[in-house]
Length: 206
Image (cartoon, rainbow, N blue to C red):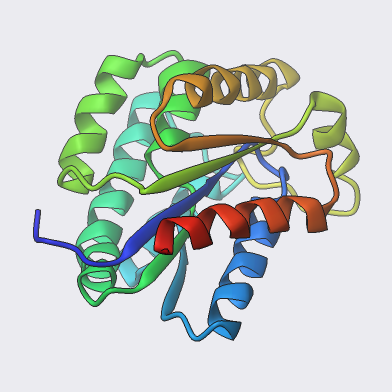
């Protein structure tokens, strides 16, 4: 992996946990301070990766767990090579919605493919690139359901209640063990979450 100069921040959490909102707010706060920022997401973030995203989230498709895992890793490999590594080499702060922890949780634990398989493939796809900080926003099941209203759900969001409970527990379990990971209560106000995330990021840049 090429030498990097930037800072890599990842926002994680179950679907509808508020990570996109917090990512946008973090990016805006950094830009207002004159920081060079790249806001991106997984799956997606580049032309090829965004095409794979459409397949992965299409509710009309029946994607097997192993095919799902390999598609996510293919998207990640392209995203890492084309977007993440160049931006970090330029010294940018990269704010990414989802990264390898999502694969460990959704495919490794919730799908039952195992953390051994996801760990190996994550390392290959990322060339060993790891976040400087991962922020996991935790929400209870009742919050997930209440935030469903009025939205068209994608293929993963339409999964069973049991699947979503496994996702939440997976995040809580892995976030407590993972290095450089901050687990936050997603039922707090958006302002409170933003302030805590921003403080942590600014300390890392100091």
